[in-house]
Structures are given as C-alpha cells and as structure tokens.
Length: 496
Ligand code: AHR
Image 1: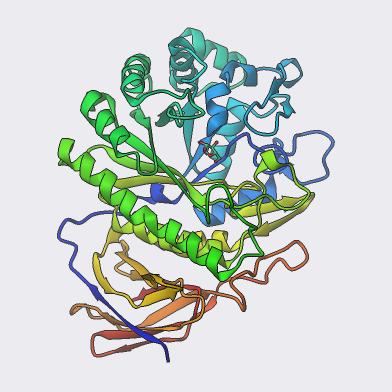
Image 2: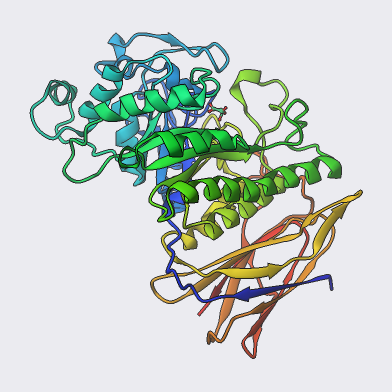
C-alpha cells in the first residue's frame, strides 16, 4: 500500500497534562483581523452581531474551543495606548497603524470590546502590554483597570465606563518581539526592563494570579532565552515566548495557493524546525529551571506567504490550503509531545491574517483547513499525554528528506485515547503499525482531513471543499492498530 512506519505508545510515568492553552489563537489590530473580521461595529451593518462582534465568528470559535486569545498584537501592541480605546466611542481618538498598512483606525474596538468578546466566546484573554513605546505606569494602570475588584483610581474609571466587575485577566505579555518591532533591544537591556515592568504589575485580583510572559526569542536566538532565564528572578517570571513562522524562504515566500512541490517541501522543512527550536530552548530553560515552573510560550506560529493578489501588502491576507493543514497538524503534535514545557501557544492569526482559521467576505464566512485540524485536535485539550516512539518513513524530495509521519497521543478524563497522525508526504501513502502497549481497547473510530490536491482550499464559492470525513482505514487486532494514511492527510483516532 505505502511506506511502513511504526509507533509505540508508552506509559505516562510523569502524568504530564497537555495544557488546553497550547490551542490558543492570536488577534492583532492588523489588516482585516479585528475590523471587518471579528468586529463589524454596531452601526451601519446588516451582519448579525452582538455588540458589534459577528455572531457567526463567535459560534465558530465556540465550537473550536479556543482556550485563550492574544490581543492587541504583535508589533501593534508596542504602539498601543489602551486609554485611547475606552469610554464613549465617538470621543475616542484616531490612530495610525504604523506597522500594518499605515491605516487610520478609530479605536472603536478597545479593552471592553475585547474582554467582553472573550466572555462571549468563552475564552481566556491574553493581553500584550506596551513596553516599546509606553511607560511602566501606563502598563501598571492597565492591570489595575481590568483586575482591581475594589475602589481604586483605575477601577473607578472602569466602572464609570460601564463595567462593575473586574475581568480577572491572568495572561500578560510584557511587550512583544523586544528584539525587533518592540524596540530593537538587546536582551541584556530587555531583561532589566522586564524586571522593572514586572515589579509594578500588581496582582489585584483574588481569583486569578498574574501569569507574566517575557518577550522571547526569534527562532534560534538561544542567547536570548539564556539571558532571560539567567537574569530575571524566577518569582517574577511565568513564561518565556518564542516566535517561529513556517516559510518557503523569508524573502521569497511565494503564493499561498499556487506552489510547487519544491516550495511545499521547503515549508514542511521550516515547520519541522519547530521540533528543534522547542527542544533547544527547553534544554536551556531546564538548566535554570529543572522543575519546569516557567512555561515556553510559542505565542506566534504558522505559515507565512505572499498576500493574495490585489490586497494591501500590509494586511497579510492569505488563503489557506492543505499545506497549512499539514503545518497545523505537525506543529500541534510537536507541542503536545513537549507539553511538559510548552504550555501556551498562539496560532497567527485567527481571522483574515496569515494562517487563519476563519476568512470573511462581507456577510460570508469560511472555515479553513487549519480550522478543521484545530477542531479535530481539541480532544487533546487538558488530556494526559501518552508518550510515544515513532519510526517514520522518509518524505524525500531531490536530495533531501524529512520524517513523513508525525504523531501525538493523549488519554482523556473519560478514559478514551486519541492519536493524531499526519502524513506530510505529497505522493506516498503510509502504512502505520501502532503498538498499543498492552492497553486493551474495544473500538476504534476516527476522522480524516484530506483533499484531491495539496493546493486545494475552501473558497467563498466552494466553502466545504475541505472538511473532516469519517475515517475507516484503521483496524484493531491483537493489541495492535493498523492504519493507512493517504498522502497529505491528517487523521485523529479515538480508541475506547
Ligand atoms: O503576526 C504578524 C507579526 O509577526 C506580529 O505583529 C509580530 O509580532 C511578528 O513579527
């Protein structure tokens, strides 16, 4: 049938839990993510909405079980002054989005709009504060504004703007990409700045402890992680970020849909690099924090291509094919398998920007192949990791090769085991023998995401070209599972 692969499921001695927060998303004031994506405003729209937020988007994100949502950036975060986005909307100042297209925005989507939207979706907010062009006081006041339960200058201001109860936000990013758009700092300088900001971020709330995340390394900048771990006292540090995008080549990204096998292979290679990045950053963190108290937070990841023809180059609007489904499936397997250290991650970005789960056009909305992968994988959220050993066949192209199969497995609270499998090979099928290591299962069922061509995508004309289907090619026999994966496919199995 195809190439041979083996997987062995191992006992979970450490009882590691795959944090649901690995399945987080990211919403920046960038292109059509917030305005025209999440938010259509309360006036002059015929699109059904709740306080200006599209109802179809809320429903789709609820089904996805989005655990957390990062906002307002990205690079935008280090230009954002939160007080511009509170109070009566007609009194809010306009600002120019200096990183993304130079467009003017009216601040009609601000702190209340975002945090109330999170309540609507049922997701936990992750706020990224302005370090690059803000002040310690401005940041500290934002924390007080959203979290102070009693009487204080900022909670009084919040109440006067119509919100009595605090939102109790835990996740706080102390700046973004401090090595680049967040201030072009050296890490030694940023570590000091971080200490200063973290000192004044008070834990006002009774019910949620602040989880402070330092702006982390760009890809393989291991020195960055080393210095943060060495120079920041660990009682004021809960997470360290890491950003990595999968590209063909940074200066020649190519089309999101019309790509060659060479470009496809290069993107897969870039996506697989995440395994090495996470492993090596974790090894540095282990040296300073062997008990793994500090999380590695991959708060930006995903595929990055050229924008669609005719769209604003600063808006980063791209289509989403089976190639993106491959990136999502293998990256989430990497995160699951590193669950001891990787405890938060955010795909960039939710709607109409980079590797989106949703694309919108006027009153229409489509779910991308990436949406379907994240939905199929949400069975892993907060389940116990089942470690595995995999012997994968190779996906060969020219003189290079990559592992063709990636996998991860978890056991949920009801005792069901889920195994997610990805075959990135664009031509070869895979035969996989899974040794269930004496676990007794009676039934296997599953779902598959694939399509006729790896370049296929869902469009506004054909919204359901790619969607999950029942998977029948898994047979359970004598403690072994025999699975057949077609080329470029994602499968999630359930064993009971
Ligand atoms: O996600 C787009 C941009 O990529 C973010 O604003 C920035 O943090 C990163 O460089």
